[in-house]
Image (cartoon, rainbow over all chains, first blue to last red; front, side, top):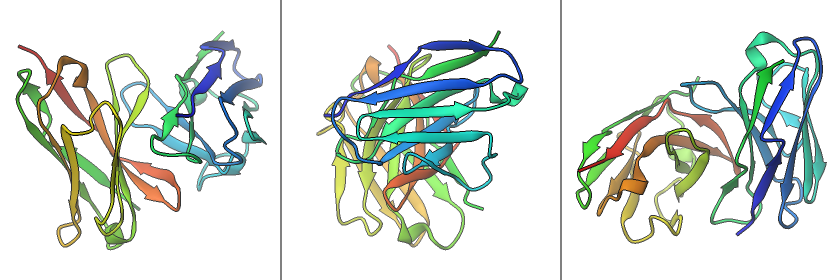
Length: 108
Length: 117
């Protein structure tokens, strides 16, 4: 089973600033990595797939990078609606599909 | 626009059974694999099961293997999760989610299952 580890667990950033979230896989997942955003009381929403491709309707301030075992989600010019929990997920080697434990992005 | 609506959640005693449903909108339901993913209260996401677009293959997390069964009725655009021998640790919001290629693109709003005496 591939273990996904996200850091930090909580990230405090001011609106308008940049947030950088990390995700590490216990073995290579190539570029088969997705990022999801989950707001309180809501279902997750796909942001990024293929490590770096934005999903339909996702603003350009969201970007993903990385391959193999190290991945980054960057959110530029943070908006109030961006404060949420973010999960990475690998779909390279399954079952099981595995998620990171999440990074909570909070307002500083 | 894809819409997934789960139902069937509720409070159930340990050892009992429950069946969840997920109704999908649109005519492409039968073209996509479907997942169940769960989230225990205050916790992260845990993949539960996957079924192929035509129902020919199913895959399960070790934690539910032998107790849960995923199935689908493409004529009714509906996905199911039969949950038997429920345990307290199965308490969670259960989401159905669509497999697009090899990643999840759409999620339902979830249905809460509480396993409690």
